[in-house]
Amino acid sequence: MEEKLVPVISFSDADILNGETTVVYGLDMQVFPSEMVYIVGKVGTGKTSIIRTITAENRLGKGSGTVCGYRLDGLRSKDVPYLRRKLGVVFQDFQLLMDRTVEDNLAFVLKATGWKEKRLMDERIKQTLKSVDMLTKAHKMPHQLSGGEQQRIAIARALLNEPELIVADEPTGNLDDETADGILRLLKSINEKRGTAIVMVTHNRSICERYPGRIYEIRDEVCREHAAQP
Image (cartoon, rainbow, N blue to C red):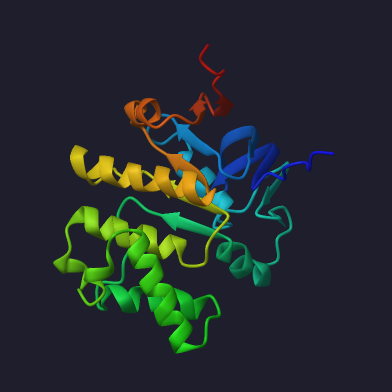
């Protein structure tokens, strides 16, 4: 008998909040391992609020939600770090620590997620930088890197704990077209080779055409999946 795939994200009739305000009503969404899923919509429609709910930064309104095996409704604060170990987050503005080297940025994340042994940490950092073609930049400071290089380091940071899921919030928003394309190719190859599910927020429809995946669109405070093109 075929084993039933368990979704890495599942929302059922979920209200998505921004602060105390509901921005998306009755979200139904399932994302399975190795899927590429886009959330599209105009600025201010609640795309980032969905991402922040997935990462447990925003509490869930009504309805139910599960991410990487953790129920969001009633999630205890002591369980939040364990949930976050199972997913990686890539931001538009990179969010690297500017006062330390690339290597130390990654070490900081490993320590924060419970790694202790320096040798294993060094090994993991080296492996991860190699996987995003940034091994030679380990000793650089973030300000010495281009925007595209900083985003590759941010992706390396997201991969450190071999997550089941990567959520990317406008990951190419601050990059020129050519650099952006390199970042998208990298994310797509992570998706295909590792089987990591990727949920990407974007307002750029051409990305969805070049790197096909399932598309959810937010309109009039509702987020619905587009029917597949024939």
